[in-house]
Length: 397
Image (cartoon, rainbow, N blue to C red):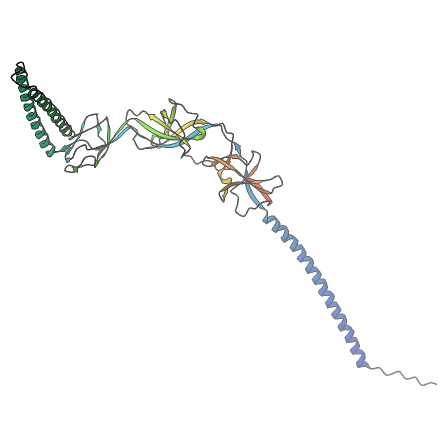
């Protein structure tokens, strides 16, 4: 019978190998878990990036307000500012020198033609006039004597032997010289009398005193200082300047409406009195003078007024909001949204400024979609979203 003995087993070595196997398995499990977590995280990041890209794209797509141009009116009312002035306006100066003795009319007084406004005291001129009159009388006496002497000599000339022809010619010449001296003296007296009359300052026409620039005792020299300003208030006048585009559509005698705010919106009827025969090259406009009846002096000279003139234009234009204009480098452009919702910039030529709107002569069409108040960041070919622009209603007056 064989003797069977089991082989000896190294228990500590077997346990070590098993621990190594477990450790490897744990490492591989951890690696697998990490790979699985990384894959899941990558998938989540990818989805978030897609969501962020979609949101960013939607955010960056600009929304702009849009509108369209409308055909301009060929016939409309042209409103122009003006200032009312008197039918006749005059600044009165002194025509002689002296001291103001008295003034009889002040600002706001209505005076008639020839009415006394002020008096100037001129004592030196009075003395000069008295002296000139005395000299005239002396010359008149000498002329009378020369005339009597000539008559006697002509009587004596009947006897040829009494006087010579030379003596007779001298007497005749003395008379003519005396007559000339008398005429000169008379002219000097007349001149001084006119200066004496200039002591009285009178109104050249009927009107209202608008300025008085003198006081009693002021020394006045010939034409050196304004004394009064006189304005004729009935009728009143106004001057306007019509742009060249409408300068041919006016005629004298046409009734024109004038509005003053002080009259609470009530239009007054004026009439075209004169029209300039040409265009002013500086302003490219035509001068038109209006006349406005003012029998009760309710309207004051110097007041601001607006003139409403119905005009027509042969030029067909488009009218766009002024907010669509882009002015850069002295060029005017308008941003237009094309059919594919991209932006393009059009260079335009503008016409009249109508306030909230502006005339566009060429560069766009009535079917173009215009961008209102385009932002500075807007660029060519940029894709945008559009939203219709609705203008605010005008403020009530």
